[in-house]
Length: 619
Image (cartoon, rainbow, N blue to C red; front, side, top):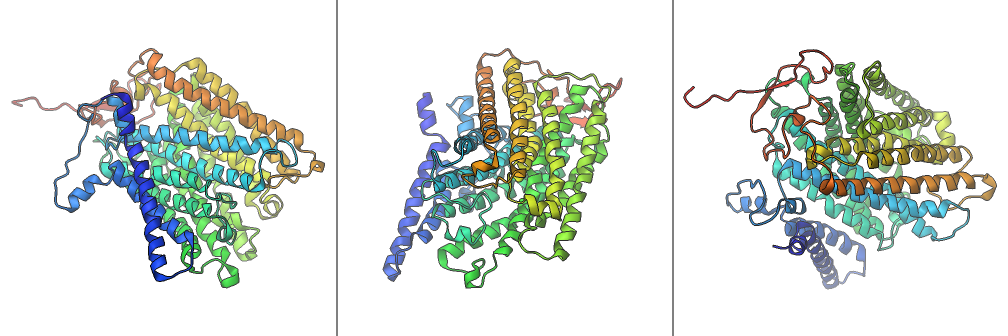
């Protein structure tokens, strides 16, 4: 079977065809029903139903639901592991596969692709903002681009979290796979048509609501907002199913001797993030569904002209959307804590405090959502408690910062590319951390709310809390995934282009916010005196984009041309580095037990794992 045939018959191509056919059939079905009932023309109910049927069509055509459908009809469906017969190894990554490593890599390259798309949208509207007046875009095009940029980047980050969790967790705890392999595959593949829906919304009128989708604006936005809301909603199914899988896997499949406080610290971060995903995603799903049904079939929840309450949407939305920030950053902070001891050759300082601080951040994150709503008109009896609870987030976060500094103190630091991105993450996340309380305090938030200060703070939090750690993780585990080393010179070029460019971009955004630049606005008054800073921000964004493209080139080219990697190039104690490449299908041909602490670097005679001797025949 040649390469072109494999690509054309891949699950992606079959799924997209199935989504297109399903969407057309769904639209046609509702239109026919409405015509027979004599109802007036209204395309929105048809598009909503067609989009839902299209997602089901994608899953059916891709083969995600095949085993479950067979099981319903009483047929045996044994799990199929390994390379499909008659196909090359790489074809696994284009099709539905139940191995957690394959799924993790699928999450990873999809995340980077979606990141590049979202970044392209940012570059386009940043070029527009480089000068006052409207040069290249209309107001509607600008609104659609920044709205799509926001939700596409969030989808990319969620995919990146899925990449790290799926690939690493079973390897780190000594499990052969995730607890529910088919559900694991579903979690990835249901996200693909969700992203397609969001992108498709740009071509049917777009939407001007930002990624938050506030009504009543979203009730009056073009048709594209329906596809955005549905894509957002369906992506929530991926989050919920993957979080269930993670929690069950960690609870039931840890290696012998791996008590809770002997787990790698990344596992604690993944647990905390999964608790948030499992418990909070339902609220935003309900909010999105209420807007979809209000637009489609006339139910009334949020339109004040018909007695609805738009503030209710904000409460439902932010009850999820503030904690979800920690779904993004907790795995990233876990990566920082995971890598620092390796490149410092010292034990991780305060392991138990870091582990519990992840749970603390997750818990406090549920108590602060209304600080996003200080300007909504809520009473002081609500605003003040939310201001105080917001300040408490600094406590568990501060625990991590002090631990990181103590871990590095007097360590034997080495500065390979993963370590550089860890240090960059700490510096960038610190910018986000010190600028956050200003927005959590009522008097200053009333002045800065919806200004570019918020944009600078949020980007610092996301880049420092996830993007930089994600790149550190990609470089760090690249030898384990591919069996080859990346080009160190290109990795460092990526870092030294991206880091100062990001500092410039983020601090510049905060500066123009202080000078009066509102976010989500396509133009500005030249009298503000911010054009020079706007140009610098745009140039910085372009540099960041080029840096990410350099990384993509490095990863692709190194997989073919670079030297083979040593089994454990970083000298890590973590279990996944103790087995050679390629990693066996079920991870550990010889099971291991945990006999020590995971981060005792530099301590003579310390041991974390040892192989379990299997009884020989006749024993």
